[in-house]
Structure formats: structure tokens, C-alpha cells
Amino acid sequence: LVLHQFRFPIRLKMRINKIIFTATFIVSTLLLEHHGAECKKRPSSHPHRGKIIPYKPGRFDMTVESKDEKILSGGKPVMKQIPDENDPNGGGKAICVQDIGAPKNAVWNQILGLNAYAGKVPKVKECKNYEVTRNADGSSTIKTKMVIGVLPGYKYESYYDHTFHPNDDSCVWSLDYDKYSDFDDVAGHWHIEDHPKKTGCTRVFYACDIKLRGAVPGPVMNILTKSALKSATSWVKKESEAAPASEMPSNFAFP
Image 1 (spheres, rainbow, N blue to C red):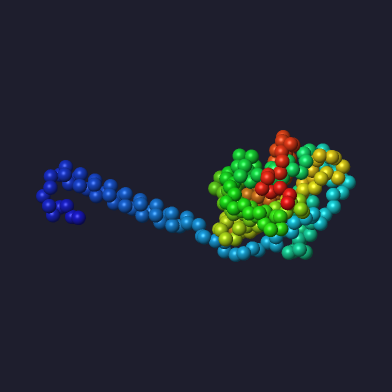
Image 2: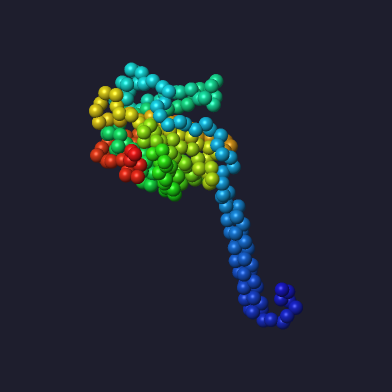
């Protein structure tokens, strides 16, 4: 619109220019917001079906030595290494072991209570099950959305496919590859046992392998790997010992 072709009063021309500018700004903003939303739209599924070899339910292939027992008896976790079948020449996989002054049912109550993780588990901002299924073999499938805030600017939204095996006292998980996750891949394993010497107490074993996309700062990697192993067993110890009479959730009870 070329206003100088018409003989409008100066004030009217200014008002018309202002209206045109405002309308142009609003349309441009809407277009940018739409474009930004399109750019941020998450893919419907993961780009692969798994890169990390998943854990099998049951005991870890490892031994708790006498020097480890002394550390565990003091209430502290122990870090152990087990061979990595995917990389036999590498340094192995890290396992965290923790003794808990509560029975197994109370420990499983905390681990399987995924809907209550936010606000209780360090770094977890959101955690919600979107599918829970009891399988014919007595195991349970638990699919969960979890959002982890590591550091400012580093937040990871991922979707997990857990399988709880009550007869093996284990819960193993990987990503739900039918949904898109920010982590490239994940494989994890909880295994618990009655304490070998203390009645009413539990020994917990935990491992979680994470593969990230691209390079990330060292502090972020440390929080997601080494620190995460210790903090995972620490919060389970704290919450289980605070509620030792808690029972196994009824929908996950032994068949």
C-alpha cells in the first residue's frame, strides 16, 4: 500500500502506518512461532532398535570381597567392574552395590514406584508410566516417560521399557524404541537379594549404561554416569529405610 498516492491527513497516515506495522509484526511472529514449533517437533519413533546389549535378569557375574563388605557395613556404596561382552578388551561395566536396612519388599516398593520419582529422585523432573502390563510368565512390562534435568541447558526426555522379573528379583530396561528419546540408547539392571548376614536387610546391585548423541561437557557426562550410579542406590537406601514396612505394589506382586 503506497499512502502518498492518496491525500490523507498526516495524522491519519500515521495511524494507518501504525496499523500496517502492527499487523505485519503479528503475522511475522505467528509464522516464526509456527516454524519454531515445527523445528522442535519430536520424531514419532527412535532412529534405531538398540545399540547397547541389554542386561539379562538375575545375579550379576561378580563377587563381593571381604574389603567390600567392610565398606558396605559402614553404609557406603561399593563400585565394582564386570566384563563388557560387547567390548571384551575394554574396561568393563560399572556396578554399584549398596546394603539397605530394610526388607526386599520395601526396596521394590521404592524402585517400582516410578510415578513417585519426581521430587524424590535427584535430577528427575518428570516421571510417569504410560503402560503397565502383566505378562503370561509372571513378569511385568512398565513403560515410562522420564525427564532428567542435568545442568542448565541440558535436559533429557526419554521413554523406557522396563521388565520386572519377580522370580529373579530383577528389573531390566532399555529404551522404548517405538518412541523418540533424547538419549541415543540405554540399558539398565536392578537386582536385589536378602542380605547374606543381616536378617530383614537387603543388598542392592545397580547398573545403567547410557549412550549420548555427540559430544557433551565432562560435568554432564559425569552426572549421567558415575554420579548417577551412586545417587541411584543412595536414594533407594534413604527412602526404603524410612519406610521399612512398605509392601510390594500389588500389581507387581509375586505370581
